[in-house]
Amino acid sequence: MLWDVFCRVVDNFGDVGVCWRASADLAARGEHVRLWLDDASPLAWMAPGGRAGVAVRDWADAASEPRPGHVVVEAFGCDPPGPFVRRMAAAARPPVWINLEYLSAEAYVERSHRLPSPQSSGPGAGLMKWFFYPGFTPRTGGLLREPGLLPALRAHDGDAWLAARGWPRRDGERVASLFCYPGAPVPAWLDRLSAAPTLLLATPGAAGEQVSQLLGPDGSRGALRAVTLPWLPQPEYDRLLASCDLNVVRGEDSFVRAQWAARPFVWHIYPQPDGAHAAKLHAFMDLHFAGAHANWGSAARSIWTAWNGLGGPLPPLPDLAHWRRHVAGWRDGLLGQADLVTQLLGFVAERR
Image (cartoon, rainbow, N blue to C red; front, side, top):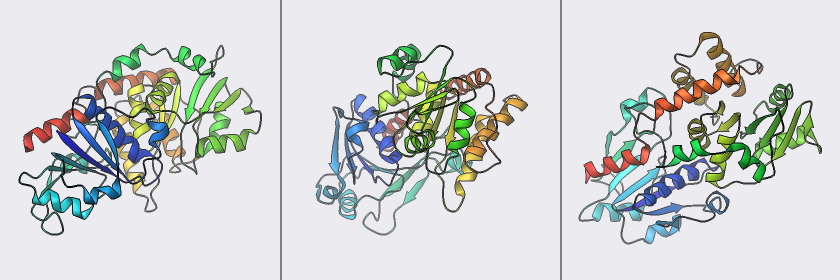
C-alpha cells in the first residue's frame, strides 16, 4: 500500500524521529511511504542514507498532490493540508485516516485507542478519522520496535563500539549518556556522577552545552570525564544507549529506545507550561516501577521526580545492578505485546 505520513517538526526532533522510524519500518515490510515534512533538515544527520521505499516530500507540495495514498497518517494531530484532505474525501475509495497520537501511560489511552472520529465539517466532511495510541499495555497500539532490533541489541558489543568511535571505557569506569532539555539539574547530576569513575557522553544541544559550560575546557570533575558527542544517526544512537550503564533520555523517541536497550534510564519528560507533564510522568512511573522492591523503587522514583523538577534535590543514585535487572524485566514484559507498526498494519487491513 501507499502510506502518506504527515509530520510537523515542532521542535526537539522527537516528532520527526518517531515518524522516520515508523516510515522506515513500514518500508522494510514492503509498504511504500511518502513522508510529508515541513522541515526535513534533521534527517541529514538522523537518517543520512535515507531508506528505500520512503520518499521525503515537502509539506507545502501536499496541497497539489492529486492522489492520496491508501492510508493517511497524521502524526500528533498535525492536520494535513485542506486541499489534500478534500481529495481524500472525493476518492472513490477514501484512504484509512489515522491520527497517530503521543505516547502516554495515562488511563485515557486504553479508553481512546482505536476510537472513531466522524468528520462532519471541513474539507474532510463525511470521512472517518481513527485515533491510534501507542502505549505500554496490550489494550494500546504498542511501541515502535522494528523486526531484528532485539537480536541486534543482544549481540551488540558495547565496549568495542565505544572504543571504535574513540570513546573507550577505562578500567573500572561506568559509562553514562545524557540527552536532556534545558532546565535539567545538570550541575547536581555531574556531582553525583563524579563520585565514581565515570565517562559521560553528552549529546549535542542542551546537554552538551551545559556540560561544557560546567566542566570547562578539560571536561572533568573528580572521577568524571565528559565527551560531547556529534549528531548520531538513529541506529548509532540506539547502539550508544546499549553501550552505556546509565542513560538520561528525553521526549518520546529516545525514551522508547532506552527501554529496548534495557539499561538503567531516567526520563526527562517534555515540560508543558500547564504542568500536564506531571500526571504523564507519574502515570508511567506507576506502571514502570510497579512490583519493584519498595526501598529501591522509591529511590529510583525520587531520581526521576527530582530530575523533572517535581521533587526535592537530586538524591544519590540507587544500585545500578538492581536497576539493570529491573529494566531487563520491564523490557521482557513489553515484548509480550505486538509492536506499533504490526498493529497499524493489522488495523488498516481491518478498515479496508
